[in-house]
Length: 77
Image (cartoon, rainbow, N blue to C red; front, side, top):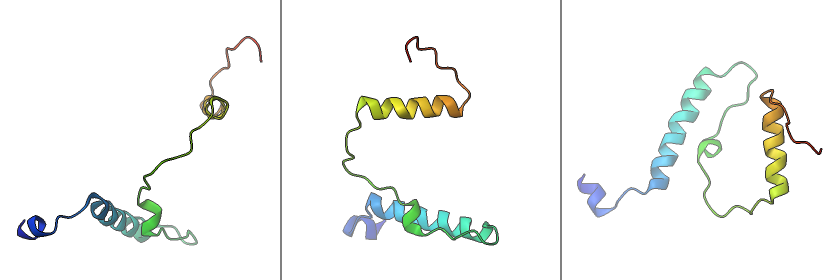
């Protein structure tokens, strides 16, 4: 606690340590021939993402609907 008051641990560092634990656990139990995970594969990336158009969002919804066996109830296709 004393060290944390002098030099606080950032949220990014906490995420990196959690990613290290996750990658270690996954790599211990991965199947033969399965490529190992790297820590950077599990660290979330924040920042501005390009804005999706409504057409791109619609394609995602259509794909999810199809993947889960839903029906498209729109009249004009």
